[in-house]
Image 1 (cartoon, rainbow, N blue to C red):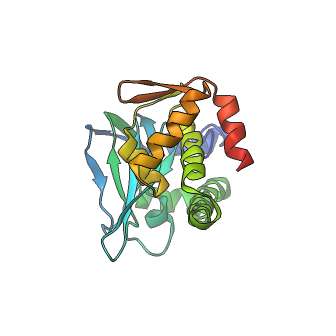
Image 2: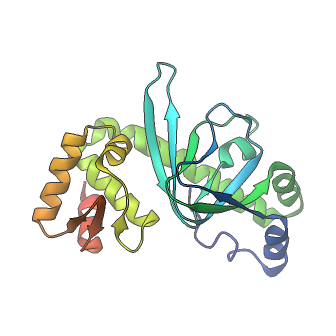
Length: 216
C-alpha cells in the first residue's frame, strides 16, 4: 500500500504532471471515503491523518485489513484493475486529508509515462502481496503473534510511536478478541516495550518490538 516517496521518486517532468493532476480532499473523523461495492473512480494518497480499511464477506463478517497513514495509497485496486468495483470500505479515523487522482488522470499518466505506470503497478502488486500474506498468517501464526505483527505494522502509520486505536480496532485487525489483544499488550507493557496513555498505546522501544515481529 505504501511506496516511499511516491512523488519524489519520479523525474521532475513526471512529478510536475502528477502534482498538477492531484486535488486535495478533506475528511472528518469517522467519515466514509467510499464503501465496498461502490464504483471506483479515484486513487488516494494519504496526506494527513489516518484511515482504516474494512472488508465485509458474503456472510456479513466484517474484517479490518489495515490502517493507513501519510504516504500510504488506497483505492488503487479499483482504479488500476479492469474491475472497477471497490473491494473494501475506507473510513477516516481522525481528521484527515488525501491527494486524489481521478481515473481519467491516472489513465492519461500511465499512457504517457512508463515510470508512472511502473510505480502504480508496484503499488498494486504490494497490495496483493499484503493481502496474501495476511491470509497466510491466519493459519501460520497464533492470535498473540498476529497482535505483535499488527502493532509493528501500525508503527508505519504512527511513526512517532503513539498509536491512537482502541483495543477493539486492534482486535479487528488481528482477527482475534479484545481479551487476546489486552493480554498480549499487557505482556509487551510488562517487558517495557510500551505503555498505555488513555486510549492510546505508546511504543517505547520500536526496534525491539520490530525484532519480535520479524522473529515470528
